[in-house]
Amino acid sequence: MIQFHVIKDPVHGAMQFTTLEDSWIKPFLDSGNVQRLRHIRQLGLADWIFPGAVHTRFSHSVGCCYVGSQICNKLGVSTRDKQLVMLACLLHDIGHGPFSHAFETLFYQGGIRHELWTPMFIADYANEGFLSSFNKKNPDYPLSQEDLKIIQDLIGHKSESTLLSDIVSSQLDADRLDYLHRDSHFCGVTYGEYDFRWLLHCLTVIEQDGVARLGVTTKGIGVVEQYLMARRLMVRNVYHHGKKHGGEFFLQSFLHYLAQAVNEDGYFKELAANPLIIFLQSVNNYNAQAKQTSNLNALKTEFLKQNYALYKQLCDYDIYAVIRHLAHQNFNHTSVTLAKRLYARQLPKVIYIDEKSVDRVSQQIEKIKKQHDIEDWQITLLQLPHLSYEMEQNPILIQDSFGRVSFLHDDSLMVEALSDRRENSSLVCIDTNILHHFAIKKLIGD
Image (cartoon, rainbow, N blue to C red; front, top):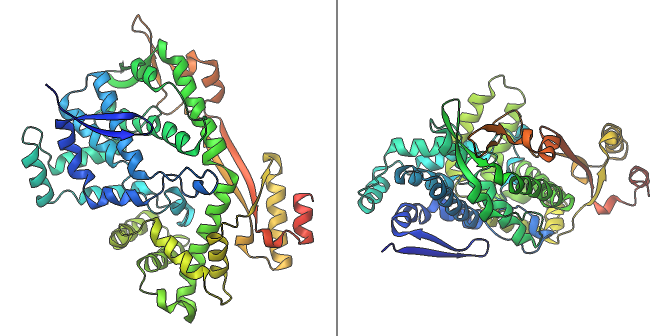
């Protein structure tokens, strides 16, 4: 009789893992690198808008691991391959920093994303102590350093097994199948809902040019349309919510000003040894060099190597602690002003801008800054691009009852209309304390 380890989850209900599956994932779950994800919010500052959105990267990672196991069961993937897929799903977000994607914008042109840190976190498991302990518990399915490299390649969709990579990272992967339901649930909205069980039922293995790929049967076209629209609606109404990005812009500005201030101002000497501050100073140095170098890849590699030990210590609490500390200071400094805004949840006014007006508004903002001595953090234009469905790169495959293969956009008018259509959310964020300014009033039409 098969024994199960059950994890109760508000999204998937009772997530059942067999004793064998539990022996695979538990050593990783109990590790510091994965436990760190308990302290990183899945949606950055989304809980400032949707109070229930306090779920973490940890709960999503466990949910993704479960979804990956369900897909493997449906497709009849071998036990060995299932182990690699489940571990890749569990570790796919291990490289995230504080407040998830919000932290990535600190880097010049967003050049250092969480995916670049992921191999370094996975490499931590390639030591003899961890592998020996794991393999004692899993004598029939041991892991080697080569297996960890395969897991890393699955996460980056670089594996020789395209089918397994599709389960972990694609337009129909376990990651999206979990986070849409999870984010929708915790935000208290219905935008991300779709029929997960029916979609799972309709998944199938499709041969394309002699390569096994993840696809769906024709019966699943409707639910895939529902799933893609759910993702589009979540982007427009949650992930790109103006107030959320306005708050995160304040957060990013606060971190930039703070890193500069520690070097320049004696008020901040007490924070000089703080790991977050040391890391932010390295970020500032990286950004300054990135604007001038002709070999950005080498600079990235060096930065990752030098700062990984600091980065893996950081979580949301480190930033909250500094914000709280500075919010109670009385001296005049931009970082203190921003800390007070953030601590009191004093969000900027957000105005959505029509795409046709972006260039004009951008020029007006720069003119206002120069003429009226207004700082960058007090008014800015944010542009948030989104692509609902990629038609040219790895489109979703459909197979009919006769075994004929087609592309989803060929069988769906809705998906064809969305294919490779880049949508932008453009918005102006304005500090509420300067709304009285005549130039600002004129800009927003008051």
